[in-house]
Length: 458
Image (cartoon, rainbow, N blue to C red; front, side, top):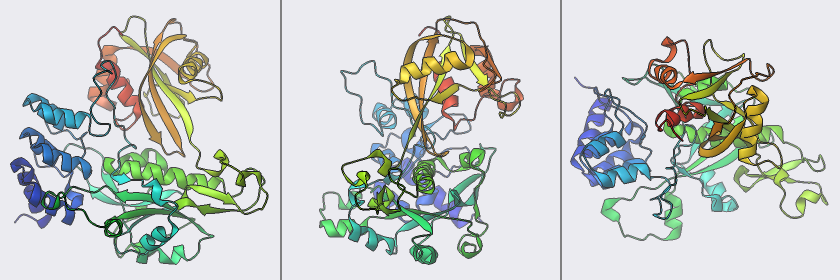
């Protein structure tokens, strides 16, 4: 006898294949957690909708957190399936679902790529951060969701493995106000931030109906995050059997389901800022958290930070360049190795951008410092939030104008030119090869795949 969850997943797939938006909306509102569950053949709801050309269904699934990166047992994504069956409207939706269609006057622009730690189903609603009354009401609202961290490690639970995945997947434990009210009663001991609200689905049965603003606000599902030092899982075991605090951050964070990775990145980065900047960087005085956790205000009258807008009062972000350098022949790429890497692993070179430096110049400087290779043309590819603790990885391709390697031996221990064939083998066979590249969650992996997909000549 089929268990209830499997029956629900089968129903989800059938509705997506049939294009029944009304029943699908009701099902997802009742059980959104099954949206990325796959059938025995590895097909997801998004794939069934793409196969049958159901535009509204694909749009609904994407708005609710449907994962475009999933691949079936034939290694096809929903985009691959839509292309094969000639559903151009679905292809455009899957390609431009975040940024909208590319303007025709930007014909040479690269498509926007969504990396791990950047996917989220929350609308940050920064306009609500200064609405103190609304935030207070949402903190105790029955639908509000809390995720909790202990020493910046999130509380999670295991959700099993996929048919085509080797590693287990985990999910953030979703708590309610009742579960955390004891900690919220001690504001001096915890950091609380407002993450945003769940993006709203367009209900086909109520399309066009305009509700009062107050009623719309009440229907919003708000998410909050808090960090508590040295917390035990004991009080959460009753509601989340087998829950635990996920640590160490790397590589453990890469087990999180992709639709929640962006939420983790947002929450942990801001909470990490609060843990490091408890006192005013301007005068050393005590501060208080404001604007939903996105500002710390000095309590000392006359502090210069109270006059005007200062970046010391808001969460910090560290920009980092990470780059795949291509040989002048177009068929080799430069990869480096740090001592802490697993055996055989090589990755893209990377480094922090310095004050007064452009992205392009940072790429050229870092590559020259670490490998001795000189770089000419540099082009941006995509970026990735990296919450360890709060960096933004700016992914680029660069073309070398010299090829002799001189490793500095301080930041990296080795750097080599690898052929296109060696890299393709590493991507296809993983740890079975002498060359190992970073996992698919890392932007370094995506930069390597981007280069492999290009023609040999840039």
